[in-house]
Length: 207
Image (cartoon, rainbow, N blue to C red; front, top):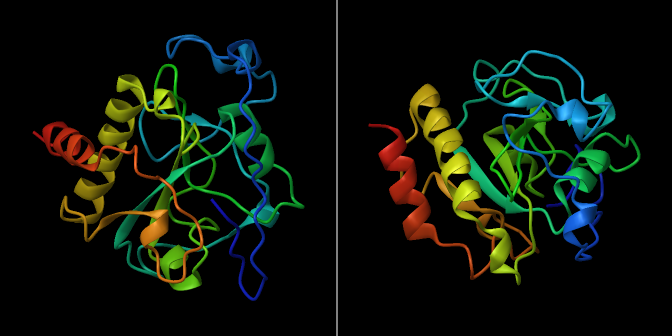
């Protein structure tokens, strides 16, 4: 994950530091998010089942996609942070970074931080920012234990919905890693991300 505001320099704002399970503040997907984060707010979401956790308005560009820009890609990220800390970063106006969605490791809960019509600052490439939806996944690229079955299945269902709604083929030309964005300096989602499994789950979610 990295910021890419228009005309802004690139900054690596997410610091990797593995926290203990008690620091994750995880609750079941069925439990209200207020139990874990009292500042989660109600709001419209684009994906049914997502919980609204709005990024600061300083961290994305308001737009009217897909009329203003076509949506051609889903970009897969790994946070290098906990779920909670990722949300906190997106809500901090000084950080100049955001993604549309964040998926929690323990239970697959989906938080939406930027509306799909708006441009998240996640890809490190303005052209790709304008034409993509960014999905962050809680975890670290060198810690595959964070890539749980719940995370894979929840993210795959979300990506399937995006592909269905925006007419994207389910393939590696349209569902890409952050490391595959032109000019990328990041390595996520990394070698432990199981692309074959992920695409299989995305296809199964479309049936």
